[in-house]
Image 1 (cartoon, one colour):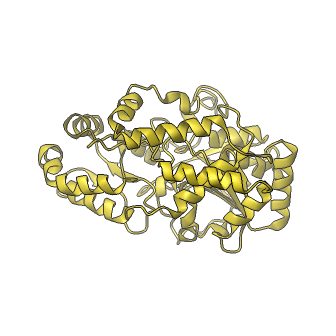
Image 2 (image 1 turned 90 degrees about the vertical axis):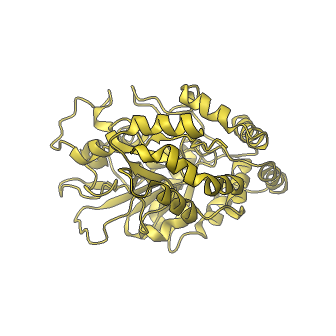
Length: 384
């Protein structure tokens, strides 16, 4: 059974529920959806955006930052520095921690440090910083916001898609402590035409229906093949320019209905999936980074033979592994002339050795993995 890292695991039941939500909530406004999601946050209020990158830009501008110095991880998604630049601010890049993927240490002269527990990496609770911070938690589940003490930041960013290997059709969440700042963010959202609530976007319907058909017909091998060939790269952001990708200004009732269905879905325990993979990699040179204090939004491995591991798992078992990220932001074309103090040794190590393996599995995939774990270990992992 092919195991895909690309999460398009939509079901026809979820699509039906989303369409029902759309048709039966005709009077809803986006502020109503904000209130529903706020219930998942303790002492914070939220604003939804059709894409989180717009919410990040809105947050910097609404917080009164203009031509300020922002501390940004070099090991993060490219749209993060793009949002900083688009908000009229300056960037200084920072390295990850040595023992994990998190960036949380900043020079005292930066105005805002963007704390980033990348790919579910934990925060160091002993770290004390005099720098004001925002939190970029866009690659963990917003349902785990208490795990990361998100209230400690002035503003925190979340995605609505767990894992989010390509994109989340349900957009992003900006969580705010200060109600005055939230008011400014919502005003920015309205003034910049991101506060509209449509019924459905055609692109969302195509994506969810395509995913549902692929799952129903058990054609994950086709999805893996297309992604490995680069045919899905059009869904990702360009790296050679400061761009937010395809413009999307409407949040839809349909996408929110999908989100609600995902929250209510009965899914396999991701901790059990992690433990199964750990048993497969035990006594090998492959290190599983995820420990008990990590969010299991991604399953992160370290291997100095990454290309061999990726090829072996695909050829022998049709299991898709991918590099976590194959770039550092300070080396991208729009930023490579910036003057940086750090050599970014930690981030460079993780960029060169990090690999991710499927964790967002359905029940039949979990059953297959447990049944075949000894064979996978014997045929593939013994060489590492």
